[in-house]
Image 1 (spheres, rainbow, N blue to C red):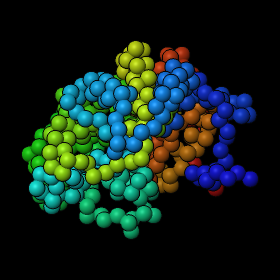
Image 2: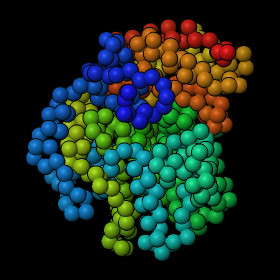
Image 3: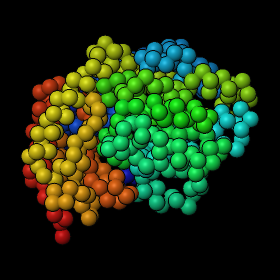
Length: 434
């Protein structure tokens, strides 16, 4: 009997080692990691340089508490990260995971307005669907019905007004203008922030607005005195072919940028946010402290992992690689769409790509979800790991796969991914079993 509290009642294989884009299991299988876990392993598995950097840091300085010390490695990493993201003078707040990072952003936005003398601003506008994390505040901000449902009694719904997801049939500017109506309905004087994923991740695979959307969002937020928060936990750090996905459609600088996953690329728990000089200065110039914190925030060993990962991303030009290999993968997915009628759409940016599944007869979601899970199971049998999801239509209906292999994937490995997905789709019926 195991003493592990598993995430679900399914049976879990035992992973024993990994290298590059492959994970090996105890029973001898080699699985191509087509989703980088949950789009985390940006530089691939088994990088000795990162392990060595972590070991060296652990032997020198493993832990100090952020309320008492900073560290050389944290100071260096914050400077390097600000330069990589082209966010000069922004300040890095380090935490352990994306949920903590979004929770921090929500609380920072609230305190910012309190320090400015506007304590009536507490609402955070988010989109449906969206996913910002599993902690209660981040989950409340999320527009993902199935994950929120059981915790709904704990959430003050009027604090989280919802905006519709991006509409590809609208221009970016028209699409963004829908924020104005939500602000007016909520009472703009009560709104602290608007948060969105520049390219949607798990909740509506790789959905992105048209060019001009984020620039107009930023302008509307400035007009109403609302902070613009870009949740780049999944889409940032080069995953979408740019250091920040929010800038793919124009030169946009949010007030707060939330980061995770690719920061340490799975080698250690590391996430955080970048706060603008205005936000940082207002908070520190008010009470003199951000009234928030976590024990492991800025953990030196995790930050050392992040610094080593950033070295690899820059030295191997993995942001460019994400664009190049993403274009190859997207082109191959378009061929699979023509070959398999249950694939309704393929889309995305860089190596954050989505496969929308559904009823080929109607071109709509199936009346019962589950197709994504069946395709993912078939793909695993073919030696390919994917990230299945559902609920993008109404919180329940809608099936999709998210694909996001390591940015270090080779062209030959992209072809192998496509071959295995092709076979999985070929043996997966849209009929619901039973």
